[in-house]
Length: 112
Length: 174
Image (cartoon, rainbow over all chains, first blue to last red; front, side, top):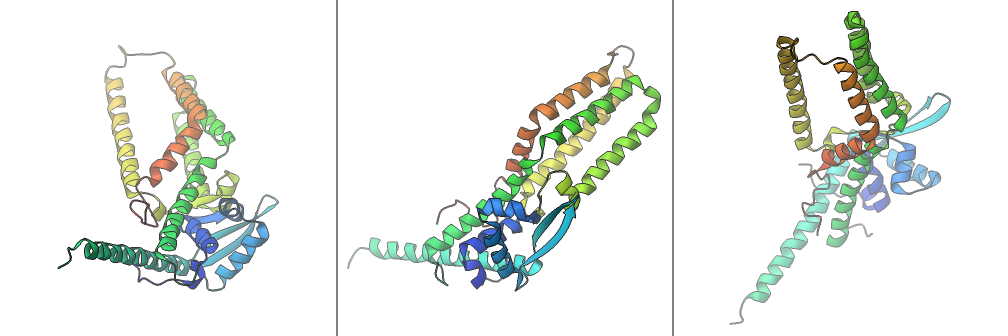
């Protein structure tokens, strides 16, 4: 299990969506990610640039026939950051559950 | 969302992670229809050639093996996948271990059943002779592949993710 640590970049739901989608793939075409996340080309490019800077996402460009293609993939750094982020999210949910249970127990105890 | 998510936001984020993994697996469904037709034609021609060119067993097997290996290799490369209409390659972490086990067991069962069938048919060849059996089998397989290819892929994509959550909220609730 990865150490629980929230990644400030992945707190943003859009970036989390992109990284989660790429986590389930070895690579994905830019077009697939754009359609899945429901963004415009320019908005996705901007987010990809943001995620590429710390090395979360790797970008490869090439041609298939005469058509240019861009493939995105999650790097090992990105995968580790996502695992740590998921672990931290679990901690938050679990803590809230435990607090909720403790409160219920306190309320259920009869007054002396 | 603030820098420290609330429990509701955290639960929502975990659900989002699972949904995106499901979406990625769903890309398996997007293979083009021409690929089903091509695969159906190749299987039909292979089976038909068994009946009509019985002396071509060696080169027929080599051609079929080369096509199968070429297809498998192409799917592992970005350009090959793009040519075959696949815009993503699913990561093994996104596939349910139960699905991998079932797929391996099914493959082993098919191989075992084929060996038994060949042995049985070989020993009782004269009494169980069916004319153009390979052609009939090829036609059935090709029709099934062309007719149900899309549904088959959709079923496989669903099975591949069944009970497997990358986000890991077991019941999907916070």
